[in-house]
Length: 160
Image (cartoon, rainbow, N blue to C red; front, side, top):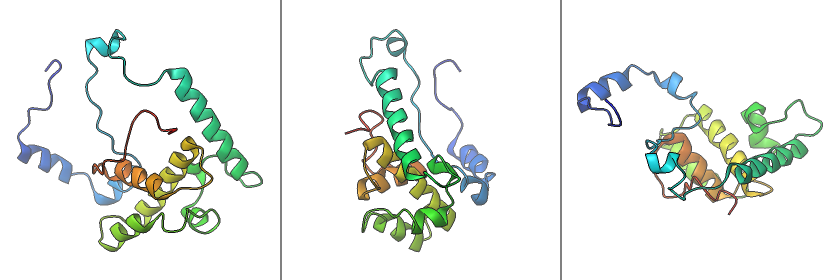
């Protein structure tokens, strides 16, 4: 099976996915499909993406931003903050959670899932240098959380 995708019939895939329980899947923060790496990508001929140094600088700045926000608390990273705190103490921009709240009301997102979306939205906002998540940051977090393409996720240029 060198370099080829899954050859299982859809019924087998569905049966396998059904074995994963909702509560277990609810604890998965990000669902990202990763394309196979081509020889050209490995040899640097793809010309896509940002350098490791650029991404590392952006991550470092995002962690510093979170560190300043959480000064005087027991937390350092968005992933450590309880959802209740993120919803009440550090709020997203007005209306930013509207799409996530609609998905919660429709049953497509659980309360735990909403908290996880909020954590990821804070990370996206930090990576973009924002003071708090805006609607686009929440949309990116929803796409990363659910795996449902919404046309918002760009794996490069997060800082834009």
